[in-house]
Image (cartoon, rainbow, N blue to C red; front, side, top):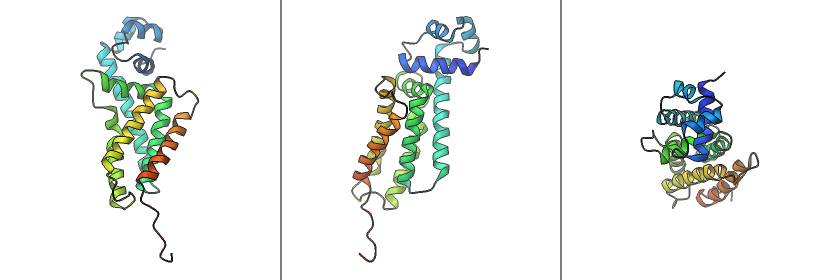
Length: 195
């Protein structure tokens, strides 16, 4: 039975691979195994379908962000790390999320950028880390947040282009990159009173 969610999933794969301009209703109908009429019954235009894919990808991303931030435990930097790794897992496994990231960058009339569904939390957490003295005094949290955005967008591109093939490899790469970044931004461990 054809469902709207099935069409969104198929469209996510196609938009992720081929972008907005490279994806047509005829390609979508072939890939989904449905007629163009069945496709347009659910989505009257490609733009409407792209908007639904974007929103679905942002919603999945927001769910991960809310899950990670609700868990708490640890410092603000620990939470940023957990969020980066959770987003890496999501990017690796969910073509609709990758499609949302791509569509919101390349489509005229797109909704809010995909990064907007997680980057504000990273900025806030890095700001908290600075206020709590967890960052080196010379580290501005704003460029660290920007670097995090580049890490995530790079992960989207690496997964899309087949540079990451083994399940879990995106998370391993991000874990190693975060370790390098952490060493450069984290304040030195506080010395004990007896030292």
